[in-house]
Image 1 (cartoon, rainbow, N blue to C red):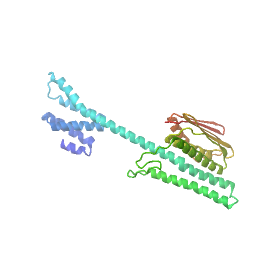
Image 2 (tube, rainbow, N blue to C red):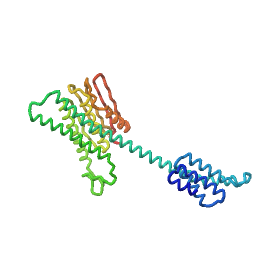
Image 3 (cartoon, rainbow, N blue to C red):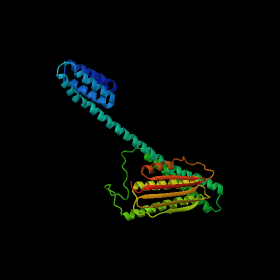
Image 4 (cartoon, rainbow, N blue to C red):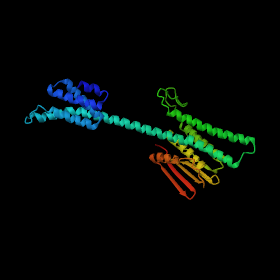
Length: 337
């Protein structure tokens, strides 16, 4: 029994059975507290390791306790019921701990999967789109030839360098997010107090800040499309109430992805249109463009699929319609989780 307990520290699935059998044999020879405690502990630990092992160990324990009791005596039923009530406790305890461990393991796997999905979406929405924009700008410059003036030439170089700098900044951000630094405490945002409690922001100021952030994003993306020869309409409705932070991140990420898709897949000679409107319960986005005849397939085609999954999981709508070269997207996002 001692050898089984010592070996169980290294190979519990093998040696605990030896300790269990030896303890039961010792209990049959001379009932004592020590072997009883050992076999109860072994039964509970085997149940924690594996459900079937715990059930078999409990069955062996119940059978061994009926030895020495006359089958015809009335004590057999009473002893069996008492032992069943007593020896099922380690089985139930082990099974409960096993379920808790399995739940924690499943939660860990779910968090890891969520982190991988977030990392993949971040890589696609930032680095991939910035590099695609660089490729498109280089192709556009090669098609149109060198600019006539030095000032225009320097301006285009600055734009290309800014795009490359954004891609490098996003690369560093992704690398930093992948590194595990449990000891590092996140720095508080400017809107947070020193004790970690977010400073209250008036609703009107938050609406104005979010409206300005969306308008700035649209202006930047429109400028990038114009540098590639695109012309279109960009309509942003009036935001009447502040959006939750997760909805704001979803909206800005989706808009950046839509503009990047126009740059990669739409025809610069045709008109495009993007409309964002807000009502009491929903955010509505409509996109219309014309696909190019020679799509270079700069992306994997998975960006919108990720957003479709997120939006439909949140209870929204995501509908794409195509007719020859015309492409239409209608999105409805609930304003509140």
